[in-house]
Image (cartoon, rainbow, N blue to C red; front, side):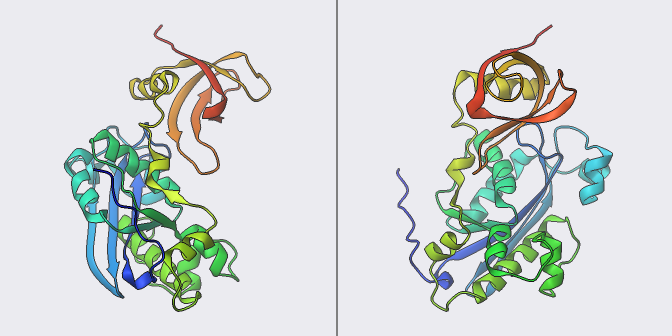
Length: 281
């Protein structure tokens, strides 16, 4: 069944919003996993639902990652895998307008898990409070969530924990909405963030060319790749890389990988990747 397009021209109080946040085992989908999910559902000025739970990743987290969010390997040792919680998340956000701070990051991880578990991507648009705050909140040194929490005197709870950050995200969005005209529509809000964010644009399944399938398989199998990249100083030459993750991004989809030639982590735009061969030796 083809979903009916959502009417984007209604006042904001006609929509149900879900502010959500993910904490992860690393920075890149495919190679890394969500380890905590938190969300708050908001309708007509009231919280009408919430989710928060830990998720067990496929691999142990590094000390560096643990230092960011404070979630330890011991804390997630007995947590359920994402396959046991993903439908609950999918049902929770169904029919809503989601929002997140740096939404492309969180949407990329969640879209990968939806597809991995054969769930359709939502058809509704999304909002990014990082983008909205740049348009509507001024007089701050940066637009990081915790900077905005302090500037707006929001009770942000524990930073870098999923539910608390989700609720902070919600209140940043509400502060932005208050600066708009009283009858602002969802379409006007989306226009003000200057980027359209649709779940379909974060689909990894849509990257169905054989070369991208090889890359995804190599990430999961932890194998190196010989790749011809039509960019950079070694344009057109074969280079060996260790792929880390794939990022769908409004500014250009890319592969994050470690380059063996240059001995450093690099970003390779997918539209410049030509031949790919998995290294089995």
